[in-house]
Image (tube, rainbow, N blue to C red):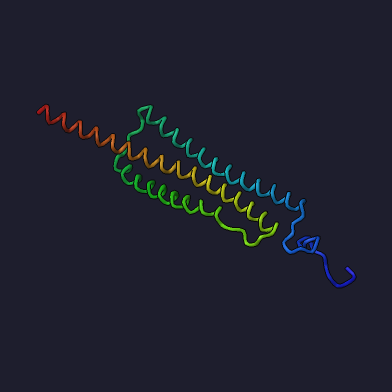
Length: 163
C-alpha cells in the first residue's frame, strides 16, 4: 500500500472493530459444525469400543467360561460410581455454559455467543452420554453384587436347613 499501511485478512474490510464478513462467518460456521461432529464421532467410537468389549465379556459369561469375581466387582463398583458422580458434577457445570452473556452488544459478539453455545451443547451432549454409560456400568455392578450376595445368603440358609 502506498500510505505505509499494510492490509491484512484479519482486519475488518469495512473499518468496524470485530466485523466478520458473511463469507468468513459462513466459513467459521462450517468449521464449528465440523468440530461438533468430530467431538460426537469420537465419543461414539469410544462407546462402540466399550460395547464391543462388553459383548465379548457377556458372550464368555453366556458360554459358561466366565466366573464372576465378586471381590473384584466390589472394588470396581465404587470406582465406576465415582466416575459417574464426577461426570454428573461436570454435566451440572456444563449446563451453565450457555448462560454466559456476550461481551458486548454488537453483531460480532452475538455471533461469537452463538458459536460458543453450539460448542457448549456438543460438550454437554458428550458428557451426558458418558454419564449414562458410567452410571449404567456402576448400577450393573451393584446389581450383580446384590444378586451374588442374595444367592450366597440363600445357599447358606439352605445348608442350615439340611443339617
